[in-house]
Image (cartoon, rainbow, N blue to C red; front, side):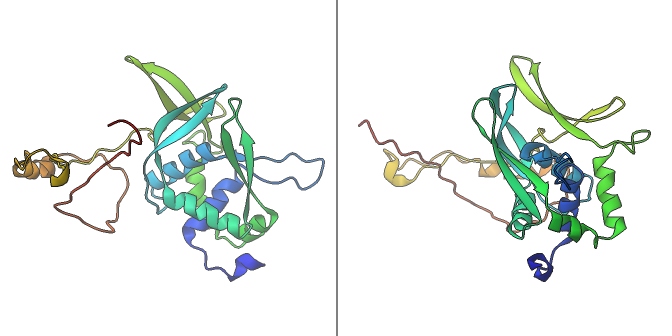
Length: 245
């Protein structure tokens, strides 16, 4: 098979096994098949990261979530590395995808392991599967119950918030922290290029307060790896307005 010529990482194997617990093809026309939607899968990937089972990074991203005919956006800690690994598995036909439409006509992506994917998992060590099972199952006495992801919209103060819950048969329930966006301390100053300013009067600077960033607390749950470190960065955000003076 084509997938046998690829050097797969442990994260690929863990993700494939994770999906196989929720989405499997039917073995005959009389059997039922199952699929897992992308949003619940992103929640389980995040849970695997914060538990130290998946060695991936994540970052806040605005995600459109559909429920009961209404789609609303919320910020979630999404792993782009996890999504890329899923694409790798699909490319080698270890996973297959299905495009659906929500009640309000928003596209929904679902995933399912293929027969080749099930064959691949036969060679995966038992210890790796047990590590993933610790993410997918509840604590005692729910260790044999598979967790499912549900979403609820609840009023908080004057706004509606969307939260994801992990539930298991028998009454277990806990709220996921995937919608809790992590804070990073920083100090910034206003900046405009000279050619869009009416005068050369210096813009105010907060450089003297940069040391305050080091005193801030971090609530990042994952062990991050820095790919690049920048200092004295100028960031310009612009918008093109094709009309008006």
